[in-house]
Image 1 (cartoon, rainbow, N blue to C red):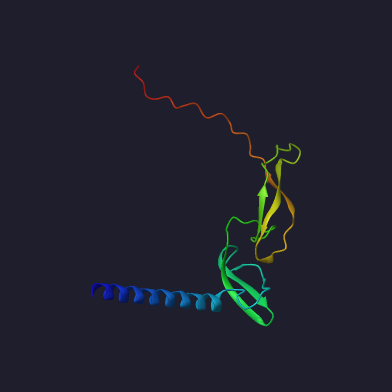
Image 2: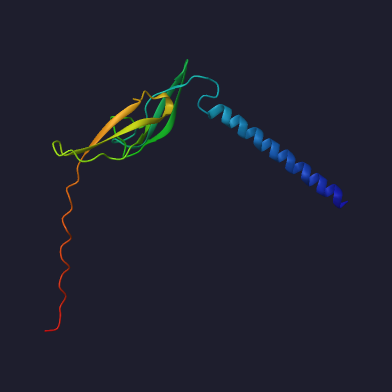
Length: 143
């Protein structure tokens, strides 16, 4: 009697598991970008407000159009685009004539078929040399 109960319970669990997996596959097929179409063309991520944060990216494939949520980091550089990821070298020495430092980046990854430059150069102002820390304040001492 216990064997039958255990066997029946195992069979029901197996049926429930296969049914859940089938539902998950159907959901992925319907909602996943690129599931029915092979070549999706995705536009840039457009933030809902201001220059960064949560927004939407629109994709087209033939007659189909989809919008997916995306996020533009708030520290991104507009010249490169948020979908172009670069590997940067260390900052070079400060150029006294221009007062800037330069470094170069090579393309690491282009997301969503973004048009990215292979190499880029970025500059930033040189940091002024820090002055020696002010001498420690003298504490109240005994006379």
